[in-house]
Length: 387
Image (tube, rainbow, N blue to C red):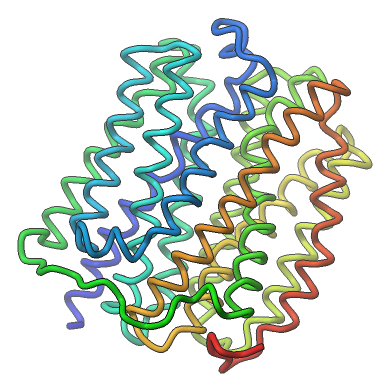
């Protein structure tokens, strides 16, 4: 790629990435008022996160077919368009059924983008691929930061349907930039990969489990942290601000990873540091949710924010070329998001049965141990055939 092409590609990918989480992040701070107005129970409210994340996983397992059907660039455009439509529908037709239906449409759109962008990054990013993946992952978290922080204020001004739906505007803008900068009309057909399926590799399954458990911390916090604190007596704006602090910490961690990762061929020290921060944050939420709310949230955010790009970068490290990178990352994210989708739903059931979300933080903290054991296996230079 030319020196002028790389910055343009970075801008397009970052703008697309920013639009992949507002449909999820904007709902969390408003769950109480949404449940009050729509009659959704705790289990159904958990599905607002579980459905799109699960669909992201299911669709990501079909990455090879999506590449063959749409091509990478057009496929990303279709995905962003679906996200835009889902957000707009929440504004136009609010209601419990509509929320669940748009969660489905939005999940498919997000899945298309996340299935195809890693292959684009690997093929076009060349030596800067790891850093570009870091910026893309950070943009995703940045979109969550903006949405979670702004949603309570938009709800006060215009009501919760507008607070959920106006994210169609930046999604449409991102679609226009993607079309203009990348140049969709010049893309040729993308063949289905001919290499053996990655599912036969034990390393691919280990990478999938790592991504799934790590992303489970993200989906859990995104779905339930604000409700946890409103239940403890915090106003919705303060709970939303706390989630905003978490996502700001995620963005900071993601930026650090993006800037430094190309100088760290061995990713394991960064993985262990991220897991340590996540464990400390979750322990704080469980042991001292009021006294340690802000430091615990920030520590959890730093851990989540570093783990998300690192897990994708480690997965890409196992590929020999862009085609294989797309297949590996699609498989890792596909199964991983299915795992991650379980935690918000389980947390909803825990809250419904015990009126307390604290056990969910303890559960996620316990998962940090198997995550550390898996991270120890990811040696530099390992490829998919590694044990």
